[in-house]
Length: 495
Image (cartoon, rainbow, N blue to C red):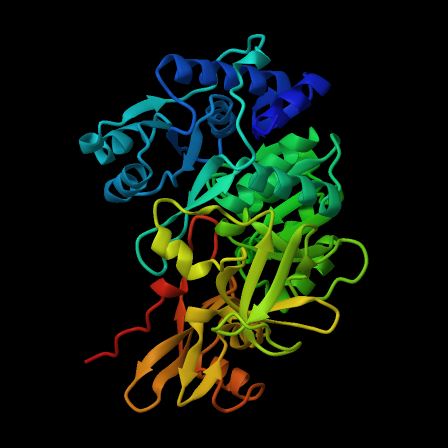
């Protein structure tokens, strides 16, 4: 069966009573999850849903998300995940662009969902966990490998969000390879579900990898450091998946040593560059290795990762996973020599079909032979390991010199008072751009901007250090905890 949801039914058949999804006091067994998903599928099809129809899912990290996700797929529909924190006009774009006629949401978000879709005629359904009943595998509608399973909207850093069409084969193969070859999951594993399920990292590497393997996914509705450590201890979590800001937050939990983290065997980081200082401090504090990897919504998402066994290169995003190719290219798609910096391009089973109903935007990033331009600058070493230098659009050009924000941020994270840092370009009359840095200090720490500037100046070339440094309470973050550089602005000088 090509339908991605078939894997849920397989796991439910293997061990119906095993825990599939947990959120504090609520635990769904595999039989519970399969039952609820099949019943939702039946409700959708009886309501007129046809294969390939889109259905919006606007839910936080709750068991209902998994029910909605697999229920839509079982009915032959296409899942359109939506951040429940979005406002009405944003919801209207996701629903209007995708053409979704149904939106599944929570009681808390129902009014906002209805307001955002009033003019679209969308049927808003409030979803809650139903009582368990026997399920009928015959509910499933078969789909082809190349049929679209999920439309994931990009963050919209270059305009309105675009929908990346991911197929059943994209998502199934990506989860299989990562679960088996990298995480080496078994039914005894417990994965930490801090990452939002409406985002590609939490959805594929967290939920799909767990469900395909018969493992348990334990959820946190909203990430908070102490709560996360408490759940790791309570549920004996074996795999932690996070973005760099989560690892920083866990390090800064007061009295973190009171929590028992001995069950952890592996941590994985993605979504943004993991500062070397954070990685080293975390591994020392929690006695658990972190493997860093790389991917995007358009790549389902995993493209490369450091292997958990063998050579792990700190600062690298590792090697391509099985079935994926990566290379560094120039603007004309020609491959660059080893060590040269260029744009990362990817080809393989994980690459999206294209952007939903946007052939021009698709052609801008896809080559005729299947390569996808990521928009990220990087290099490859002579052993085939890749290093992400920065986003192509994040590059700062100061007086003709290229400054890569990540390099400057790595130095900032070495400062003992700094918890978070982001480097951005600041407009300058003569240089074009100046290097600026926004920093958030660790709890109880103090530092003056001049001191921080001089700290970096001693460690980097003169054109790289930030002339402007400003201290903030916290850096702006997206739904996954990824720092949003585009929202960082220097303070306005006093008149």
